[in-house]
Image 1 (tube, one colour):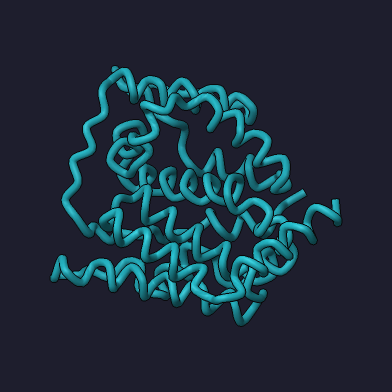
Image 2 (cartoon, rainbow, N blue to C red):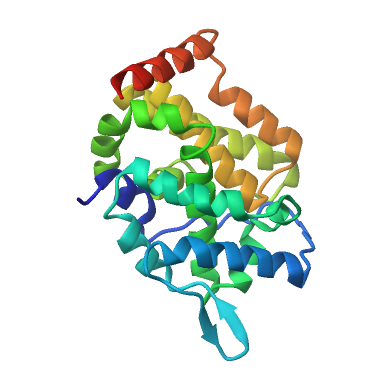
Length: 241
C-alpha cells in the first residue's frame, strides 16, 4: 500500500541547498565502487539496476527508487535498508556525502536527493527506528500536510549564511524549528526522532563542524525527561508488536 509517511518525506520538489563549509572528503575509486556495489544489491530488491552514462556508472533516477519505496511499509523498507548498510564497508562510510552522490547520479540535484534519502533512513531504520515506528501513524498524518524537506526549508534549511561563524547557530535554529513543529503535532518522542533525523542529514551533507553536530544532537534531546520519553516510546513499540 502507499505509505504516506515516506512519500511525503522524499517526494519533494525542493531540496536543501545550503553549502555551509568547505569540505574536501577524499574518496578513492575503490571506496566509490564499494558504495555503488552495495547500492546495486539494495536496488535489486526493487528490480532496479546501476545504469551507465558513457563511461560512468550511476544510480537510477531518484524518482524510480522513490516510487518503489513508496509502496512499502517502514518495517519492509528497513529490512531492505539493512541489506545496504550491512554491505557498506566501514572504510567507505566517509563517502556517504553530497559530493560523492553527485558523482554517481545523473545530476547534482539527484545527488542531493539520494544523500538526503540515505541520511534520513540511516537514522529512521537505525538508531531512531523505535521512535519512528512508535509514532508512525501520527507522523504519516503530519507529513502528509507538510513534507520533511519542505519543513526543513520553512525552518531556514536553505538559508545562505555569509558568516562562517554563524553556520552552527543557523543549523541549530533549523533543528529547534523542526523539533517544535513535530512536538506540537505528534508529541515529544516523535519530535526527538525528527530532530535527530534532521541532524543526520546535516551530518551527511557535511554542513557544519563535528562539534556543532554534537550540540545539535543535544538540542534534540535537551529535555530532562527525554531519556524516559525515548524508553517509553521504545517499550510501547515493542509491546505493540
